[in-house]
Structures are given as C-alpha cells and as structure tokens.
Image 1 (cartoon, rainbow, N blue to C red):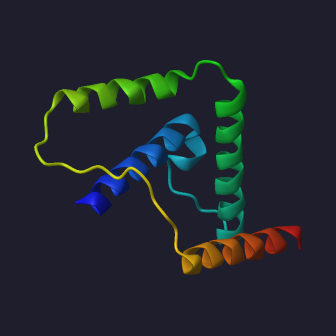
Image 2: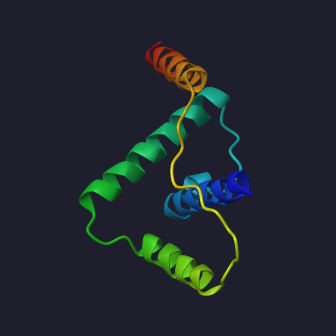
Length: 106
C-alpha cells in the first residue's frame, strides 16, 4: 500500500512536469541519447521555474486536486513520510548520472 501511494505521488509529479513542458506529453522519436538530454533539460527548467517563479498556475491545479482527495477519508491508511535510499541505490544512481554526463560531454 505504501509503495502504491508513493507511486501515485511520483506519477502526479511526472504529470505536472508533462503538463508544464509539452515536449514530454507526446511520444518522442528522437534517439535515446537525445531523449535523455531532453528529460534532463526539462527537469532543470522545472527546477528553475520552481526557484524563480512566484506563482505557477500548473501547481495550483495540482493543489486543487489534492484538496479534493483530502476530502475523502481513508481509514487506517499510512502515508509514506520519508524514503531512505540504500547504498546500492545511491551508488547505482550516481554511476548512472556520471555515465550520462560523460556521454553527454562526448
């Protein structure tokens, strides 16, 4: 149940990103290397928007949806409050990021 709720939250985040940056909303026919760069650029743009834009209308829509969900009462539901990555996952993520960066530099 916890994994399902975490997955739903992550899918909402991807939905927000896809709504904000339309290039992610449709299938891509670019080579996989280009797709990786597009996704990275979109995430960086999203972070810049979050940092410097005072009001994001896309986020307001998402918050309204969350308010609708809060109106529903779920008994005995436990929510994921924190995620602690394992060393294996951290090493995998760092290695993947380094490989992507090195490939991008070539």
